[in-house]
Amino acid sequence: MNPIRHYSLLVLVLICLIIGSNKDLSDSSRMFSGSKHYSQDSQINISLDEDGSNINQSKSSSPKPTGNPGATQTKEFLNLDYETIHGHLNGLKPGTILLTFDDGPSPVYTLQILQKLKAANMKATFFVIGQRVRENCNILRQVYNGGHEIANHSYRHPRLTTVSPEQQRNELLQTQAAIATCLGIDYKIRWFRAPYGDQNQDLLRIVNKLNLNSALWSVDTQDWHVETTAQDIANEVIRGGDRQIVLMHDGTEINPEMLLPHVSESRQETVDSLDIILPYLKEQEIETITLSEAFHNLIID
Ligand SMILES: [Zn+2]
Image (cartoon, rainbow, N blue to C red; front, side, top):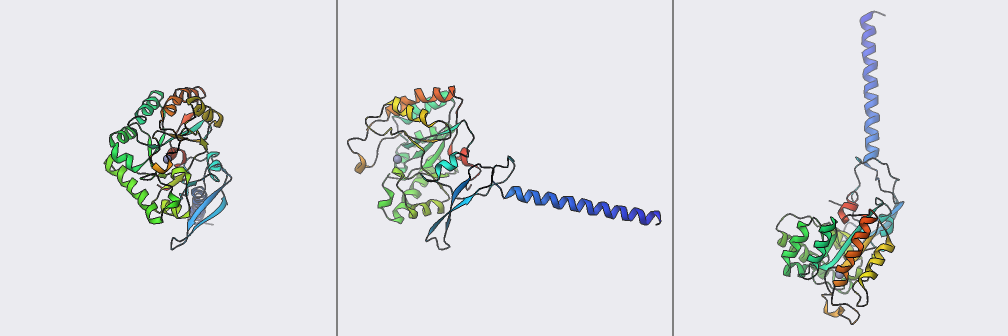
């Protein structure tokens, strides 16, 4: 074989080798892009019929963690209800916890809570009532300025399964508008929590259509009960340990129908409980994170 032809053949073989290795690379990156580095074994996926008439739930297996932080995630509507929440929370980084405060903003309690969180350098998620946002916008701004997450908790705090889908939708939309108007910036609200955890398929469909995710809780501190003390609230948090979504309240009951004798008209026990809870978390090196920090890999953005 003459040297020129020999050289040409060598170049051709090299080109083929390079193309082949690139193909392998692109295949492996496709594999990563379809995977989740979340550790729950299974999760409930919710999809809608094309006409939006039905929510379909299916249980699917998720791949084990890939350990690749660069892997992109499949975003979807996340529904953290009593059935699915523990599977999702088990996938969180150990040593993290989510503190959530509902029913504010309140001129009496929210600022005290913000002050304690700031002193401890901790973050929380505030599920706010639209009507209270209109009344206490300056307090909502301080929640935002504190770096906490703000989420939707309806406008009037009704039992949402007792009202029409149209009213459900209005409750959510009015609160979205109240938050946007108050903050006056393009703030992305990512989460909704149904008052009393009272939800049905109509409501979840609306939450999904508004590009919100739904989150209930895994630790109920019962801080709304007239007999619950600050120590009781702290005990529930301590018993729950890390990787929990803790339900507390920075606002009192706003729905007149629900103002029953055993419902406390104060949230001072909740405020005081933070003097036990926050030092405990610090001592245990448990880090507080917001809902979107916890689930940023999974949620629609
Ligand atoms: Zn509430």
